[in-house]
Amino acid sequence: MKDYCNATSSGHGDIDLIQPGIHKAHGLAELGQILGISLDEMCAFGDGGNDLEMIKEVGDGVAMSNANPTLLKVAKHVTTSNNEQGVLAYLEKMM
Image (tube, rainbow, N blue to C red; front, side):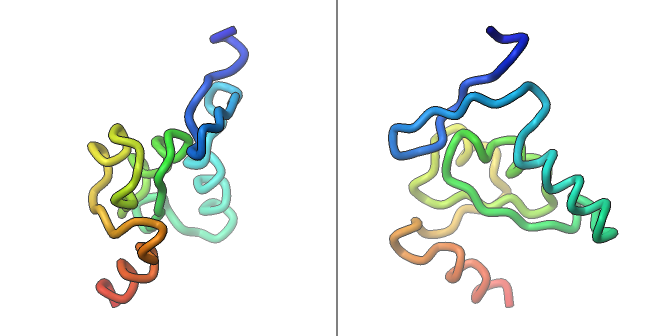
């Protein structure tokens, strides 16, 4: 099965089955090519295992405080939880 898909936690008890090499960072890289923006110039927020590659590969990977423990280890920054409007809190702090 590993040749065809990777299983990862997406939060709330759900599991995503994802084709190898296809993940959120891949999607952002494609979007960046269209917009002329590199992954290093991007900021992304995440809390689940399905956010891991994205948080690792963007220039500013931010994990929510209630994120998957693996994600918390690789994130460049941590903000408050989803329930505490963590994305807004981080953006207000940075601006």
